[in-house]
Image (cartoon, rainbow over all chains, first blue to last red; front, side):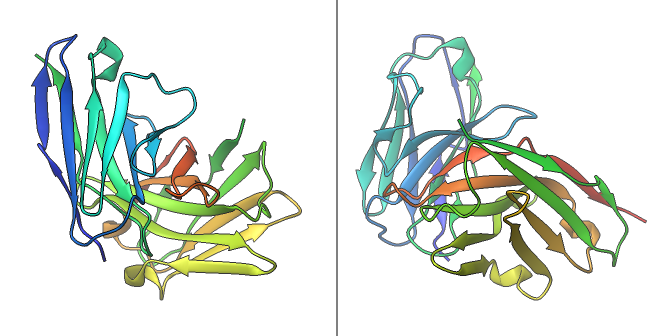
Length: 107
Length: 124
């Protein structure tokens, strides 16, 4: 199975800050990388597919980049509703696996 | 807009069978660019993919290796829904279970739509 490792595991930031979350895969996987946001008690919400494509309805302050083994999710200017846990996930082969999550907290 | 509505009991006893259903609206379970997945989440294992079913001229199913001997995921075209069965459950199967639609029409094959989640507790 491909292992997905996110860093940092947790992050504190102010409203308005620019933040970047990194996801590293244990093997190369093209751009079969997706990002999700999850708030407590809710299902994950799909943000980005194929490394850099914004899902319909997702604000443009979210962006993704990367290919191969290294990927990033960037939020350009944090809003209060962005404080949540973020997960990367690959679909390069079966089984699809998720990173352990990055918890983004208000400073 | 696709919506997934989960149903099923939130409690199972050890050695019994866990059964959940995911009803689909806004799409067809037979859509040949979609796959219908079950994913669970627990503090110890994080988000864990369990398996999927999908239709490509015929029905296919894939399962996580760790569960392959205990799991069945199947579709019911008459009700436009799909189901999860996990046999011989133990407390380690306690988790929040999600159904999710995977889009095979985009390169990311992402999980675009999710059910609301069902907390299943395995306890005597």
